[in-house]
Structure formats: C-alpha cells, structure tokens
Length: 348
Image 1 (tube, helix red, strand yellow):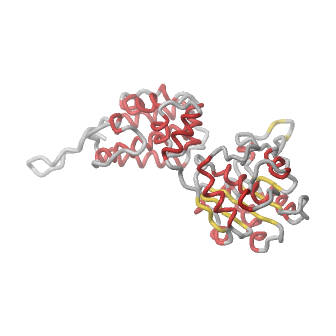
Image 2: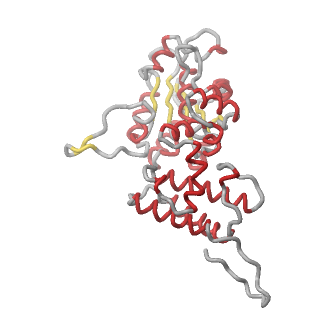
Image 3: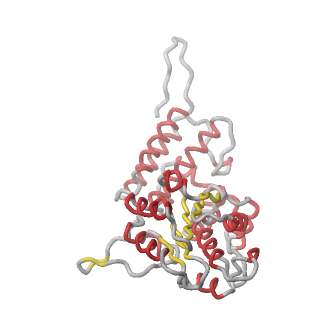
C-alpha cells in the first residue's frame, strides 16, 4: 500500500495500480505472481478506491484519513480475505485461530465459505465513510468450491457500493464464471534493472544472481536472502548436487527444494540443447547431460511437486531428491548406436 510519504514501497507496481484505478468495473482480477507484489497491489488498489484525496490522479495519496486507516488495517469499509495460514505471514491477522477442545487448530490454507458470507454481508451494508465498500480476496484460487460459488452469486448481482479486488497467481484455477465477471489487471515482473536496484538497497549481495534464481521475482529473492540463501550458495548448488551433497538443503522447505531442482533440471536441459540457462549462471550448469535421463528426472520432480504438501519425512525426502539429481546429472551424454545398429544406453 502507499505509505504516509505518498510512495509505493514496490515502485514497479505504479503502472498496474494506475491501470486498475482507471477501471470502472465492480470486480477486478489481478493476475500475477506473489513474488512480484500481488497482495501488495491488491491492497494498494483498495486504498486507492477508498482514498479521500481531491483529484483522482493523486489516489491513493497515503496521508488522508482513509489512507491512514488502511495503513493501520482498520478501515471500516475494507475487508481482506486471506487463508488463516497467510494472515500472520502477510501481516494482516484477522484474529486468533479457532480453538477446539482446548487445542489450537492448524491454520487453514483455504478461504472458507463462512468468511466469504461475512464479506458479502459486509459489502451489502452502507459505507461508513461514503466512498465504497471494498473486499480484497487473496489468493483467489484458494477459495474452496463452496466459497467460490457463494462469491459468484454476489459478483453476478453486486451491491451498488461494493468493489471486489481478487488477486491470483493461478487465475486459470478460478471458476470461468468468476473470471468472466472480473476485469483483468495484469501484473508482470519488473524490469531487471529496477528490481536489482531495489534489492541492492536492501542489502542483497549480487542481486542479479538471486533475482535470476527467483525467476525475476524481487520479493522472492529478498525472502531467500533473509532465509540465508545467497548468490554464492546458489552458484555452488549445481556442483554440490552433482556430488550428492544434501546438506545445503537441510533447512529448506520441501517445496523450495523441489522448485530449485526443477530449475536446475530446466537449465541443464537448456545448456545441453545449446540455449542459455535461465536460473543459474552458465558457468555453474553441468555440461554434456544425458537428455533421456534429464527427462526422467523432470517427470519425477513434477510428480513429487504435485504432492509436496504431503507430510513427508523432510530429511529422507531431500536425500532421495538429491540422489536422483546426482544420478541424472552424472549419467553422461547418450551415445550413438554401435556398428551393429543396436543402441547403446548410458545409465539413467
């Protein structure tokens, strides 16, 4: 959101924010990556819709009473729907987790129907400050099926003062009928120069390396740096994996391990095919890979990625993943058929 100084903390959001505020639709769908500022743009749009500054070009101003209420997470005409599991992470805690039998329940990863019903009831009431009633839903693909259909009914017949801002990193996972009732506001990755400068201001060393590692997503790169993953470790990772070293992954969440190995597999494919790698520096990517072995490795990683939220034994999973990676990277190039016409296969 825009701060009291009138500036966006993520400067690359400005074009998408201006685009969204120009729309007159009752529902907007921001499509982009959380690592670029998906949630931040959603809240900034809500702040702009509620801003009380004179002159549309100055919204959100960051210092009017309405903007300050949004900054304090206490605006009476704004409600933000998040899964319980994201509320604390994003600094928008809706309250204490429910308790059952005296024990704290595991935070839900879904947006439930009760929360949507409460938001719809909120949207139907009179505005407290006279501008609009705004509901932000993030990430919208986390709406469970009942919640999604409940929201759809309101999007079909929205209350007069209500505005809905849906933010999604996977818009194709939404109901087609929800997508059709929203105007899309695209959010793309920022220019590399801007993102590198922003990361450098926050103390990230060799920010270009870490930014590439994160697919151009500066917020993800900053999170990695804060978790102890720096450019030097990233550059060494292919060599360590080729040697079967799993220690660098010891404290990583399983999803991050799988994603990193998928990036290494992708870049090894690229180098083997004569293309430039995307995520790793070219000098660190193994050469002369066996393409069939890489294909098998990629399929296995994709299978595991689908179930990465399963309660695995993390240590054993990482060891198995690194062993598979070592085998794929050490298979060597496939050889041509021998003189008898029989294909000679290298070990996969």
